[in-house]
Amino acid sequence: MITYNNGILRELDGRRLYYTFMAGARKLISSQAELNRINVFPVNDGDTGTNLAATTRAVIESLLPHRSYKVTAERIAEAVLLNARGNSGIIFAQFFYGLSIETADIKSITLSEFAESVKRAVRYIYEAVTNPVEGTMLTVIREWADYIYAGRQKFTDFNQMLISSYEVLCRSLEETRLKLKVLAKNRVVDAGAKGFVLFIEGIIEFINNRNLKELLRSRYVSLQLPSPEEIIAEEVKYRFCTEAVIKNVSAEKEVVKKILSDFGDSAVLAGSKNMMRIHVHTDNPADLIFRLKDLGTVTFQKADDMVRQSDSVFRRKFPVALVVDSTCDIDGSFTEKYQVHIIPVNIHFGDNQFLDKVTIRPEQFYSMLESAKEYPKSSQANEAAFVNTFSHLASYYDSVIAVTLSEKLSGTWQSAVKAARKVSRESGKQISVINSRGISGMAGLLLARIAESVEKGHSHQEIVRMAEKWIDNSRLFIRVDTIKYLIKGGRLSFMKGLIARLLNINPLLTLDKDGKVTVLDKAFNRSSGLEKIIKHIRNHLTGRKTWNYIILHANNPGDAGWYTARMKELTGMDPLSVMNISPVIGLHTGSGGSAVALMTE
Image 1: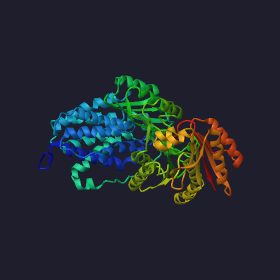
Image 2: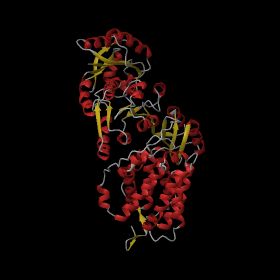
Image 3: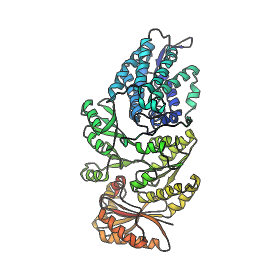
Image 4: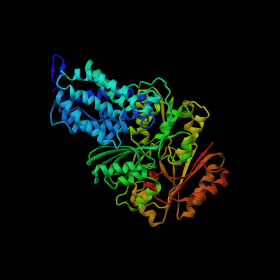
């Protein structure tokens, strides 16, 4: 029940809380590009707007309103805590977590009760941050809460309280540039703090016009692209903005904070031991996650490459941004040169989640694979991961081209397509998602061809059109050392696998024109398998000219060296890359396999 008296809003129930949150979130999402532009603290990686938009978008897309204020507050808190991104996103989530904890089990809340819960929620955000810094979102929320609490008896309703407190918010926001040198140096206010002010501003606008139909109709929000203004580039101290959700944590919060601080800076810890959200800037996300998995169950991870994000803001080489999923195997020096953004596919060992190539390295993966009681699984990069990346890039690039593994092997392509449509609608930017109809080095070669075309100045449309020919001219030749992982991973039926093992047959695999794995040949031992792969490559190259090739192996540098020597004899070229394959692919092939990816002119 929402209590009005001649248009005065005296109490807030669950539905009104939900709709006001939605209004604030809409304002944040539409303003994310401007927040990205002024993001200089703690790292000027230009993603504060993207992170806050992702944090609040989860509530809009996953929750339905409930009559009870307490129930809605708890649901909002859980949703933002699970989906919080970045330093500001986790502080924002922790504020709503504190708000839900400090609210009694009530169906509606009075202004005085609301003011008291807001005041008490401030303690939670300060406790979450290892080294609280004033002149940030922390300060603006605290000063806003103090003002509301001090005037809780004199305000007649929520409308008056919010409008009156807006002046305090704006003053506090403006003063952030006086409290932090880096803000003064760049002549900007704190991006996270401005995000909170915009959130409240969106709520005020909704309360003033009370147009619920318009709010619900505006499912897709257009991005307000910022006017250009010079921001000074700063060195990124740690590469990865790393986050995780850990459930059933066995250690005290102070112990977890100490671990986070040992690995980097900007540590934030939100939630409780039942469900804890952590954030830290570090160069070693894989080692950090392996340390944290011993304290509880790591059910979610994120590791944004802040160097790459900073490059997008300050050192863009090309007008077209390039994105791939982590199953695309190509040397890291290439992705550095062409500023490629990589979205990790997920690997699950039991209830613990890892990010392919980022929070689990190949050597860690194969060690865990041998000792795992339950066979690991992989899951596609989800739509939200692509939305967040595309939204960030739309703020800085003219267009985006993404390459994914074959749609016949994963739902990743479909996730990327949905995200591209959503962000393109919001930003007006062209975003193309290309189904490589391949995996591993095949996708790597396609990426290389696209990147070189971008460098040569070809248009977005030309590149997308030419990509189909490049895909048609690509092949992948795979030798599997053992079929037991194909059976465990479900790529080969148990009965077929049993027969093959009894006959000591190891299949040689390839991908057909649609991107499905198919049997190319069979071998009875390693040496015959290697020779047969080369024979098939030689036959394929008859009458064709090699553009380039990539050598791939699963913890088997011996095979890689053998292939490299033979391929140089065949082509007269060095390989573009020699790669230890993505752990996601290794999940299905196991250790010891090898492959050659090839593209002809």
